[in-house]
Amino acid sequence: SFALAQPPSVSVAPGQTATITCGGNKIGSKSVHWYRQKPGEAPVMVVFDDTARPSGIPERISGANAANTATLTISTVDAGDEADYYCQVWDSDSDHWFFGGGTKLTVL
Amino acid sequence: EVQLLESGGDWVQPGESQRLSCAASGFTFSDYAMAWVRQAPGKGLEWVATISGTGRASYYPGSLKGRFAISRDNSKNTLYLQMNSLRAGDTALYYCAKHRSLGNFGSWGPGVLVTVSS
Image (cartoon, rainbow over all chains, first blue to last red):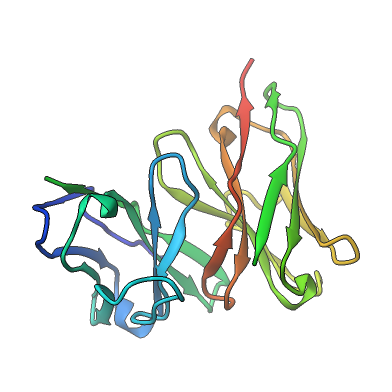
């Protein structure tokens, strides 16, 4: 098993920067992926392989990963960014996939 | 455009079985591993199963191995999830997902609800 720890909630004012963390033992040695899930919708991948963005995801969404913490950063936040955000890794040794518990981003 | 559409969700009693299907289009189905991910009401995401593109390899979390079985029919571009001995704790929205690479889930269907209750 590979535990991923996310804060349950993050709040930020419009126009500010939101930072969502994902903690795990030596997570920096794994590729981390991030998903955004708006109410009533399916998840959408917003970052893969730590820092890469799928097509259609704006540059103001970025990822980083080192040591025991991966980070998703959303700059110039607006109401449309309100959602639950999940980190995810694949443990290739066990061929198991793990999700963090999710972080609810609230735009004040 | 990748499209995934789940079906087969229903209300079932504890102990019963249910099979979910996921119709895929917009990509070469057999080239990609596929997965099921579920989400209990008000809870987070939980990986349920993954199957390789050929269907020869499948993977499950220990908590579900033996009760759930993932399969695919590449001639029909369809993914399946057979769920047996269902419990109340299996109540969830079940998503079909396409692996972008083996490590992540690049596309998701809208999900199908399975309710296990007496």
